Length: 478
Image (cartoon, rainbow, N blue to C red; front, side):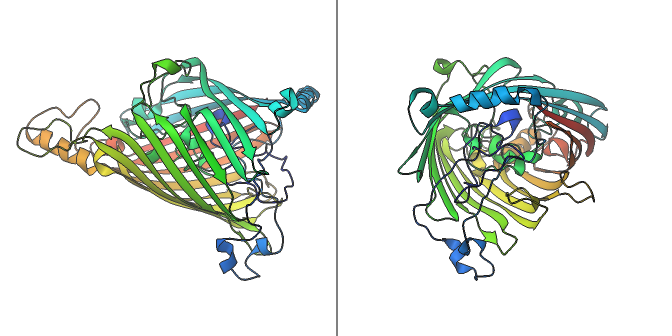
């Protein structure tokens, strides 16, 4: 994704891709150091929006500037003194961004123990415009280096090992210089087709949005997607590529192919030859991006499907002989429907200048997935307190249904007196989490975001009390 930095929205002759390309700085799926990618339409007309009336369809009047960027960072930079240096580099084809993100989260009630955990990440993100550097017009190289350290409150205090309640906690352990991304991007056919390939995370583009990344739990994608190896989730990168095009002004189509390997493999990001590919992930996604009425209220309605060719073992696991039939290795399919709709504008023409409602549903092949179903619903509202136009308030409820096949295997083992496995207190069925935040840009380049989370049924059982957590996220952009 290549969303524009906050406060620097470009005026484009056509709507910016709602799933534009970016390596997610600071653990989000939508931060990047360049301005928005221009993806021209193949046909200069509306698609689904043609069904709207003239009054409802803002695209019928004219194309819109439509910057869709991450809301979870403060406008500006901490060190404006280096702006001239930054501008000189950009004129020569090099852009960069250095970001700190720290998260502290304390269990203040329920769970397995009281106390606080802290995690942080440092990211250095760069883009190289090969047209300016070596004359290869239209080519861009993206790289992202990061460092992560800390402990996860879900494990230490709440007692859950499936759902991470902190965004920054790493899937692959601590790493001083983790190579998260190194990929090339190129536009073809008068910018109507956009290609990216190399080392990247699938959830940079598929099943994500900047609104999701303003929350801790859903950045950079819903939990039911992030737990499965086929969706290489930040900071896990894999070999792959995707092609994106905009058939009409309000529709986007993208398809991809990515190598699949275990999420906890290659903890440094540099050991490419050591990764064991288990299959191929083949995602396809369709987005309808309407603009409603004279206020140009943006919406993003996403329908996606992904097929993982890897043959996964039956979730039922080891059960007493004769109690159940186990299945042979099975591929995994994922279906997802995600939507967000702006309700009001609060100044500005870009797509984040206002309040949204959002929701989604994810379904995975139950027999071979950690979470078979998830749905979430929430809101992300800008400027709800008078004289605080840039503050953002968000609240989201998420429900998770564990694989019924996992539950069946656990029940059979429990009835037979067999161990259920590490950190499992009983047959795991479902859980839910309520999250709320209030983001305050306190200084150019610095965002402070208090957080509240309430986890219902930790460990997806009724054996651990519901947990109440409070915390603080701080983001600083150099």
